[in-house]
Image (cartoon, rainbow, N blue to C red; front, side, top):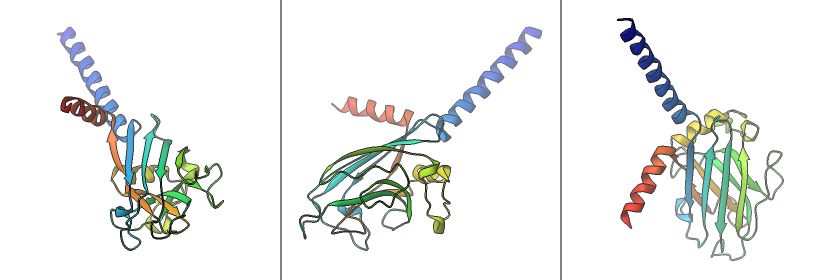
Length: 198
């Protein structure tokens, strides 16, 4: 009888630990965020036809307090006025087809980002960096206060944020992509499905 009680207690503890770990993986680290940037997703206030494209990828660390990101883009920018160059890029808080305020800088050549913001390569290129609470600047008018890293991550998980690249000829944004979340297990499943297709 005592052995059964001990066994039941061990099973209960292991089950609780498993649930806690799963919750931690879902709400904490282990997520990857991606976006494909094109002019078609711009809402400034209309979509844009541009030859430029880009990609964004970010990974949340296991502690859930830092995003490591890579942004890549290629021109030419603004075929209506060739010669446009990238000025800055951000994560904005906003739903698809809606404009939103800046949550965090990805790069800037205007000297207007928080300390440590990398420069945007021109005319094309790839830039990498990290976002912590110190890099979250808002937008306060939409309920995200400076330093509220958790709120930014919640927006990313909800698909309520987008990456935007701004240029000299399109200062409001030339290419944009809604950011989607992939959890570790989901990403592995997706890769497995892709392998079966080939």
